[in-house]
Length: 317
Image 1 (cartoon, rainbow, N blue to C red):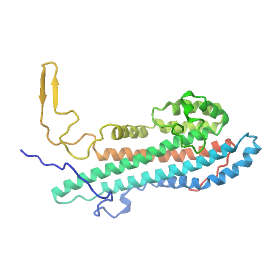
Image 2: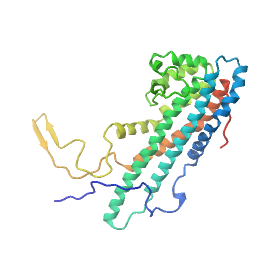
Image 3: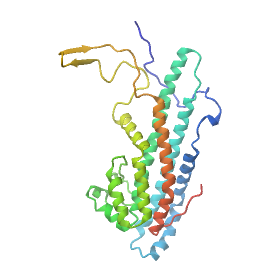
Image 4: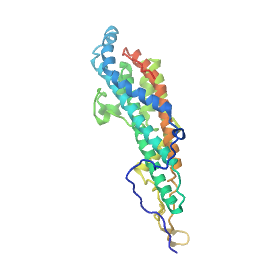
């Protein structure tokens, strides 16, 4: 018996089909995520102003050689703008994923099957695009917190005496040195051990709270789920969205007990990990998780910088 299935597909745009309902309320706009993304982007327009304003406060506090600290503050503001833009892009991709999920199914059964395949492929791709930007923003955020910690001399000493970070060369402001930009992951002990110790050495409650909130993000099950999915999609065998006859277990197997080898001919079937609903759930949860983290970290960052005699000018929502 001949089996038919869609084995390959391509489309020229991720734009959802025209049959998508025009009701904007059908899509969750994630307004809280949008608001924090816009606000963080706006901080990058204040770096120079904050740097100039910090000169006098650093001088009055008797901070020696404060020039690099001013550059550090400017770097922090620039990073905030970059993180905000990444979050905005992640939100946009997730919004389109929602629109694809709302696409109306055709009445013709064959066409309906094709639309379902294209919907699944597009939703997954858009969610992966969203998580790409979420992960980038999370990595940027962790390195931002690290740079805020470095604004305190006692904390900076604790960080820079670590042998594993020698190649970072003290994390000079504005550097493109690869070793100065650390990977943020659920298992990274720089974030779970070294950074808390450095914040403790500063004796500043604000820095300790800042690092503690980053640690909550590191351990958040939504971030962990995102990291695990990303590990499969980027580093192992990404599940195909279409049915196929290339099962992961292969065709040949061997029974060591009976010393019998077997070959089988499988029918076209779905990969168990291809479910676009599950991928979207991971993507949406991660987006909300990061948005909440940025909202919580913003005032803690401001207080930490002020405690380091640096200027902070809040951005209105």
